[in-house]
Image (tube, rainbow, N blue to C red; front, side, top):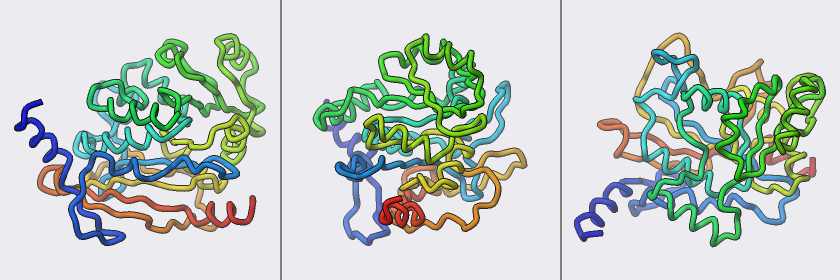
Length: 296
């Protein structure tokens, strides 16, 4: 790499201002979330975290032409947020997803492959995992009521241990089919859908300590409802998208009491999106924190 390329690369990763807790010096994007220490050794149950990129009016996904499913709008999707997404993924020993992702993958509509990315730009993250004694890639857990999970989508991840979390009333024939494929199927609640608390607890019993939730609003709602989300990372791009058909970060009946979150960190990224920038925030979930302290 030439001196000019090194300078350009540094500039590409710079431009981060820490707003909370206050920090005077500018920071680099690369490594910003690797300092989060999400493994939490010795904790009684897994540490569960998730992240989203959103517009100022709360849109995380909108319809798109010639697609069956919503997608992250181009106005807020950006490589700097994607770098942080990969850094969060690098620290997980398990990724918790929904079956919807695999159906999108089979249709060619998934945003990308699951972390950690195999591109050269993420080689440092793959090396970091090795240095931390982690597997080369996180294992996978899929929450699904229908068990409609295309086998061809799973084929891309057969080098990882795959778990399926479902309800006791889910189709028995589909459960058997998945088990015949070498996938571990866990019953995590009554009815069709898996219960948020049981999902996390079962994965904790399987030895996982750090769970990164990469899914949509319904799964996040389930974890919030059952007090099993510990931290939320939210990138908020400074633009308003509008639209009447959209996804936001959580979907379900009103949470009573509401889930309260405490701001843990806040950064301003002036580089992306062009001319407006974005905020990079992380929040600790207070209800989960109290339950953990009480031993629940």
